[in-house]
Image (cartoon, rainbow, N blue to C red; front, side, top):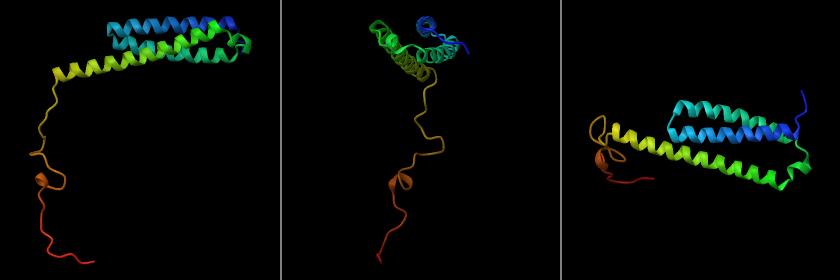
Length: 129
């Protein structure tokens, strides 16, 4: 296996940044299939980036510009996650309009905690220990 240089790390970093931008565009467009494809590609690119980072010399890893780019990358991933959650909530609301959930019981009347409407079945006349 060949040695990964900082140049390879920077190429991996640029590829991840481009993939995140493509995912953002697909998420905005609402293309679920395209988003799934981009998610798989991003996962692979992130694994490559992680592997490449291990080969970066400590003095290069301490570079303020590189740290800033990695911090921004982390923020963009968090924004993607938030965007996916918002999109999922919007889809759930749309589904509730198209297919409203039923509020009635499927098999007869709703039942209370321990029997029909909370009524007791018998009466205790005495208590023995």
